[in-house]
Structures are given as structure tokens and as C-alpha cells.
Image (tube, rainbow, N blue to C red):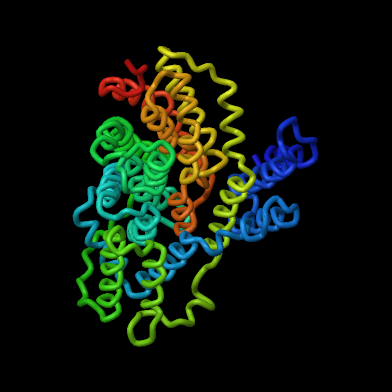
Length: 454
């Protein structure tokens, strides 16, 4: 895997740019392909792959340093930092064990049933907490503690499955709930600003959730359980319940306060990232928190933050080089759009959205696809709303972890093997493209979408 990506990266760097393509775009493509190869192959630790990407990007001047290093001042960086501190507090105080033992009394005993339960509960959380990355930061430490209680080691399949069930469960179905994920709101804003189309919660949910969300609820947990099958070792004895310690009580109050602020972010306007950072600061305050500020110099692993900075920098470099628009235009030249060939048009728009997402990440994909909507509507005879709704099908069937920030957060906080994550994503993508998207097309046509306007 790495050898192939290295050769491709070298070719993009050394070969002359084809007509109409700037050399800077070729250089950006080279460093992006190299980074993806480093992360996917795990030939070096993920954070070291990010450092190589950042170094190569600056040395080759593929983008200004403020673009390359934009990850260091992004909200996601501080969301993960807060998650690391809160996670350490949960572990040190023993709150994780208390919560997990409470869960074990209600969760089913078989691994596959447990995965389904975690996935569905995590989806329910998407209706009340608007940030997927915030939900992942909240869930991953609890799932890691649950894995330990069930006898799963740090790098075990069982642990990976639990973390992925919570992470994918709170993200994939949420693509079909309008305010629940960042790409949804990016589409909302782009549709309103560029096309003067106002999406509504009910219509959006009715079109997308029954098939795309419903199939994810049914099939995604089965994929995870199959790929990461394990046998939980339930504790045979019931340990005597201890009274709540002061640290546990204070941490529970901090976490609940953060949860309330995440739920109500549309009212107060404070980003989930700053809520996470504020919660971390409170955890570190003398006499108030349960952690000493000294943990920042020894107990916090900053590898996940370096890794995340590289992933965010990759998206910024791709956007700066306008790779997504270029790829989208090239792909559009390949497909033949015909009025009346509705399924062919749906498939072509969906594939275009998937390919654009390779180079821009999901939060940036909507702005590019919406900008193409007028041309595509004219070529297909569809409404512009049908065009942009077809383009969002790419969000639930992506093959690379870096395309969705919540997955990146899960990988970073859970210290997951990227090859395992990729295996899961590709498996569901194959099923999604072959089964889910055709069914979604049929459902859309039933309610009046994805067809030539009368």
C-alpha cells in the first residue's frame, strides 16, 4: 500500500502537469497521496505521518504555512484536547468503571447484540447533541472503559468494535438528521446562499432517513460485529458498590454541564470545541478539578493532536489547491447526463460526490457539489433540490477515515488501527453503493424526487 502511494506521489511531483492544471495542484496531490499512504499503511505511527505531511507541504510550498498548519488553531484540535483531559479525569476518578458497570446490567450479553445496542443508543444521542465530534469525544472514553471491563486489550478487535459502534452509530445515521452533523449544515448554508433553497427538517428527514439511515441502523452494526467479532469476558462476581467519591461527583457535574452546553449550542452560540476546552480547564483547576495541571507535562499523550493537525491540514491544502473543484469538473466530463435516464443520472451524481469527497473531506464537499447544481439540473431535467440531495448520498459510503472529522476524532482518542477502520468503511461502502443507494433512489422517486420535472 505505502509503496504504491509513494510511487504515485513521486510521479505527481516529477511529471509535468497536464494542460489546464497548475504545477501547484500536482504538488498538492503528491503530498496528499503520500500522507494517505503513510496513514493507511501504518508504516510509521499516525502522528509521525502527519509530521511528514506538514514538513513536505511547507518545504514544497504547496500552500502558505497558515494553511498547512491550520489544524493547530481549529476547533477540532481543542475538542480532542478537551476529550483527552476529560478522558484522563474519568479514568483517574473511577467514574468510567462506575458507568460501565451500570451499562453492563442493561446491555445484552452477546457481542453482536451489544454492538447493536451501542450503535442505536449512540444514534439516539444525535437527536439531542448537535456535534458529531462532540458526541464521539464523549463516547470513546466510556467505550474504552467498557472494553477493559469486558477483558478486551488495548489493540484487540473487541475493543475496536465497541469504539467504532459508538462512533459510527452517532455519525452515519445522523447524516440524515438535518442539524446533527457538520456536512448537513454546510449543505443547508450552501443551498440557501447559492441556490436560495431552504431545507426543512421534516422533508430532509423523510427523504433520507427511512432508507439511508434505516439501513445503516440495521447493517452497519452487523458489519462491525462480523469484522471485529470477540467474546466478552463478563465479570462473574458483583463487586460491592462503593459510595461516590468527591472526584467522581465533581467530574459528573462537569460532564453533565458540558453535555447541556453541547445540546443548547444553537441558543448560546458557543462552539462544542470551546465547551470541551472549558471542561478540560475546570478538570485541571486546583481544588475544583480532579487532575493536577502537571498532567499536561507528562500524562497526556499529544500524539492524537499531532495526527489530527495533519488531517485537518490535508483538507486545508486540498481546498487551497482547489482540488475538489478540479476533480469534480473532470469527473463531470466523463459522465453523460440525459433527461429521462434518471437512475443513470442519480448514479453519476452520487459517484461524482463520492470522488469529490476523496479530495475535500465531507464538510467541504457540499459547497462544491452545490456550485455544480445549476449545470447538473439543466443536464438532467431535475430540480436543483434533487441534484443536491443526490450528491449527499456520498456521505454515508466513504472509504477513507480522514474524510469525516468524527472518525478522525475516534481514531485519535481510541488509538485505533487505521487499517481496521478502513476495512470497515470499505466493506460498508460496497454494500451501500450496491444496495442502499439504489433503494434510496427508488424511495426518492416514490416521494417525487430524482425525476425529470413535469
